[in-house]
Length: 247
Image (cartoon, rainbow, N blue to C red; front, side, top):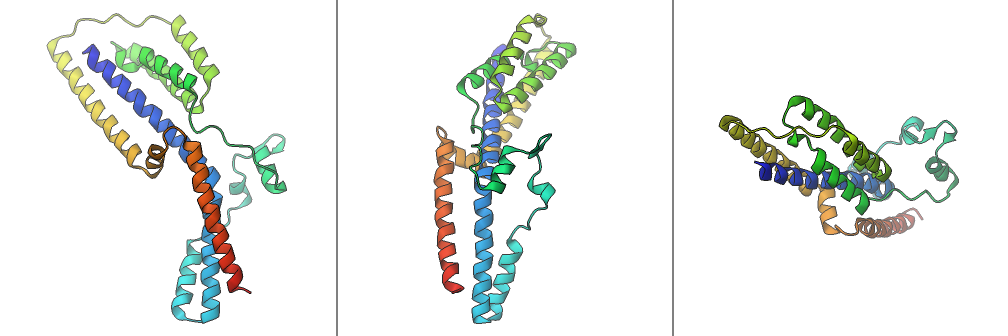
């Protein structure tokens, strides 16, 4: 039973680690490449409109209308600067956009190796599945939720504080002998939990962002740079084509 519990905990740690990587990479992907995709959509609409204006063909007009409809509407000021305002006014990112100054580089895609090590150690020690009663499980649930939040932010200092807090806390309850029916029920629960985690892992791996991460597991930052270079080349090509059409 203990071996099955430990195996499930290790699997859950791996799934949670990958989930955080996918979430962080998705956020960085949107932040870095979103404006380029929006620019390409706008250029596609302008190109279609320019072709329709020159040809007057109803089919070209229809394509132009479809291309324009696909362009995301311009967000309002509140949407544009959502989470970019603080007590002193615009954040550095917002001010950089308005003044054409370089924007501060986004945070790392992945938590550092030390953060990952601390997270794994805490998860192995404090995982709720190791609890033998409801009170202890509730304590571990609350603690692991704080550990997951700190890991998601890559907060090494907070994870160290949590490690100290756990070490100073009450010792986990001693394992008690289980009746055969309790043992079977526990094994069944572990099996169902593993199935759910397997489904989650498969969904993460099959997602667009998960697939991109698998292409460059050791250097996802570089993958974003390569995609950005490709998009910039596409933008330049469309801008040149549009300039010829509107001459």
